[in-house]
Length: 310
Length: 212
Image (tube, rainbow over all chains, first blue to last red):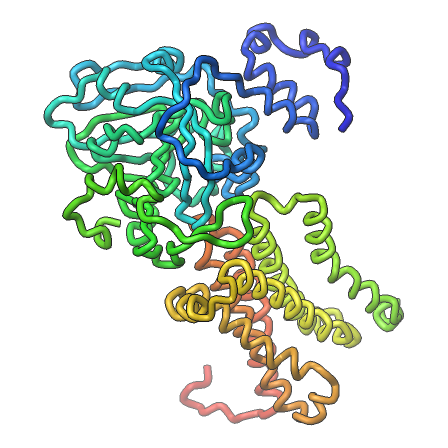
């Protein structure tokens, strides 16, 4: 592919200073100017994450390619087709970014992204990711347990659940109008689930910051639950007393439960959950209960009827 | 002029080649490795789309023929219908081979339990007798009346296809609704033709009590 010399584009001539000092927006403007070359350039919008340690919370499965992880996305704010988010999220502004953590806590606080990232050492964790649509990936995420952040704000005795909210700006996310789901996207966890060491507050993948289409700049990853529980681009985390509403449950309560733990024994009303297609492979493989994380998480659901609490 | 174009054998050959373009593009994408991260799903969705498009184009022939008074358009109808069947066969094969790996038990369970599979396979089954009886010899053997009656199945097959699609999508139903809207328009036109014809073919005296 032809890559033109940067000298042919003098951004200083066309870009206001305020904008070209901001790296992401600078790159976005460049992408727009380059048109068809937008994709290779947008790849530069992610930055290498330093000081990442390997975690023992890792599976040995073959990794899904970065190309597939970044071009096969469900992010309805940026379009309902899998290939759309990679294109439509190119110009999404993720800096500055703040996360408001509050509700039933002793020390509510609004964090900017950098101060959240400094709360604990970043770990790389290779997790299985199982979508409710019966496909799956294996992804090297980077982050640290959500419980680190929750302990900082000190949930009080009344707090029983954690509610999350995704950023929503119809101007930056015009495709959201056609998503067919209520936005902003909201999700929730029981407090013990949120405190579980597997529940990863995530900032990156494949050694770099999250690409926009994968939920930049900060998202949850809950490997034992269907993918839609792993909420993207988080702006708000609230500790609450009652089970909070969740987007897909609002959309179709009989199809998407609050728990949505991966479970091959409980089918989606419209399709089977018994097997899944690992992206990169042609034939399907059997789905494992709790996506293979049963040893660590099954205890949290002891005594619960998982057919009712799907 | 239109009659000449429609009658020219090259027109039919050109349309034949055009109908193969979606399949050729899929092959090309395959060679270039551009079938997305989930090639099976991509081919299923793409061929599924083309089944519906070809069925709707086939259903559009009669209205176009009547509205523009171009009886020669009928020359292309069988070919278009058979292309719908062709893409349906590819669509089904992908499902049988890659989604189910020929697991007959799994397929049967799917047909029974998943309404969108039930209605989709019903639509596909309806296309089989239409493809089998699409030859001129079959029309003669069946007689035009019976043949036409049988081929009305295409209405139900297309409706089944639209419902199959509508039930499959998670939340963004714009595309299946668009196909549904086109089918509705095509059927409204037909119903109006049938109801408008009746009094002319069989004039029935209207009882005084219900006449306006």
